[in-house]
Length: 171
Ligand code: S3P
Image (cartoon, rainbow, N blue to C red; front, side, top):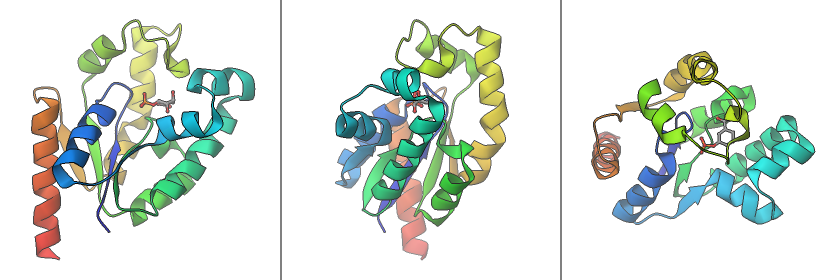
């Protein structure tokens, strides 16, 4: 399949890079969170507040399963790697890329954010602790890790495209 799944912590730039990459490879772009929100006509914040995180995770799993049926660039939410059944789906996916950002980078991007329930009213240290608890999962699910701190979204997309095409040629 022609499929690239972007993973990484909140603020890693998955959606920005995903849109650029989709254009470069002429593939559809699918953002799991956006799909959930438009299908259910409800924001992520409202899902967490009204239905709870487990309900969100269920919708996220359903949407990931559906997204993986097509050729596409797929941008995932930062918590996708938490569930074992999602990790199994990612193992079977064509190509999984972890956009690795340092705490300095994601904290500055997430400053003032009101759209991500998990970080509301959390201190910097608490947010870093969420990230650190996930690092191993992001890394082990990935076929490619891109350190994004000193790269532009365009450069990140180019790097992923090149790696993806090289792998295809070697198959
Ligand atoms: C989450 C990340 C968010 C969104 C939800 C939960 C997480 O997506 O799925 O708020 O658990 O890290 P982004 O990574 O796109 O911010």
